[in-house]
Image (cartoon, rainbow, N blue to C red; front, side):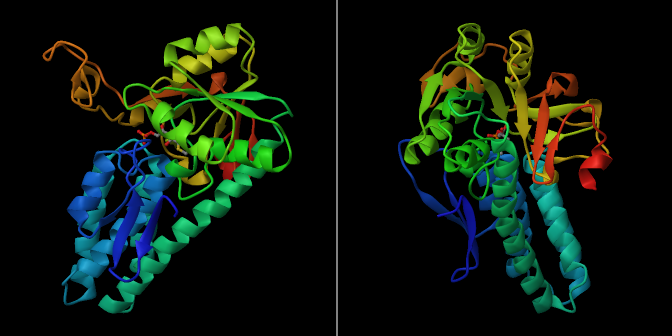
Length: 339
Ligand code: MRU
């Protein structure tokens, strides 16, 4: 199934529990807002475009659960739910974008039942459009990859980070679909290991050649000539920087040092047209993600820890940003992307 969807029988949100991969592929059902918020916070559903869909479905779920007697009360309730959803993961632009898009659609509803129908339709549209958008990103990005290339990626910007197909890994899928021989080097992506757990798993499912390395091996791999380009996704793109999974900034510097192109693949919904590096809140996650691996203790239990989930890569380290509207080469104005 898709990473996230709506169950029409039970009016609930269904999603692939990504915390269980690669050991187990399990679909879970979120019938309440607290279970959906918990799924987002605990990374059962993750990745910027998938979070956009989760935000949209979250508002639809709230509309179905609402007992409001009139539209005004319902819209007030949905706005409060929207704020709660947005606060679960503050950095990924798509979560707020998905919430706002469905709230915007609902504001034109004729009545409470109409609001439910509109919210669900809008959320379904977001999910459907995500797949089409990623295919376009793939088409544009595939032109940047040559037959025989090896691409280094970080975190998971694949089908499991989206509704389907993927952004960065969507580019790889599209290039392969065009007949190119493309290999992937997946960085482990400590501390949550989205690279080793999810990227390798989904690529192996599709029989796309993938080799896993520890994050600290990326410089060595580039120095050895094993990497033709770096290709990552994004959680938020502002005028000056790309926010993506912690470690992306390091890869960008390494790529620059080794004259390797550094590509970012992301939909327009990831762009934050008013934001700057300093205006964005970077999510800080639990210290225990570093002190433990599952139940395994890796460090003294009370050691001081820094655990930002994302970092900011300056636009000058980026060779090109691949979107559904085409490929943009910095420096570009965000307004140009919208045309
Ligand atoms: O913390 P995560 O797993 O949600 O972080 C995800 C990433 O950083 C991805 O690279 C990004 O969302 C792009 S996904 C197409």
